[in-house]
Length: 151
Image (cartoon, rainbow, N blue to C red):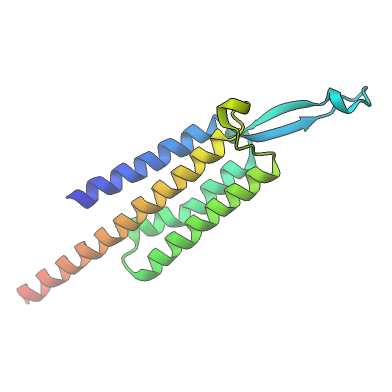
């Protein structure tokens, strides 16, 4: 019963963190005014998660861990969850670095809150999927032992 509750808590926290990251800046875009040749006239515009491809790439890479988490029972499912989870974290970190991620957080215009929230969501989802895989294995072993006792 505890693993079922832990799985739901981790998956829910992960989805909340990723949804929160969609409305937070992942970095910033530099816009140069057309008529000005002065370097000081550039404008920094925040790149929000919901409008950027890094956010959607993270979702795509997390579909495999979610599918393996709900349907997998063996070690190969764990390997896929860990592999694609780490790949999602690396892709998020690299993509946000390319678009001007800044570790400053709220002090420097909160250009880093979106990526931090998205990586926290990835970690929560990976933990929830790994808990679900161990629970699936337990349920399968219990069902197998019950059929052996009946036979």
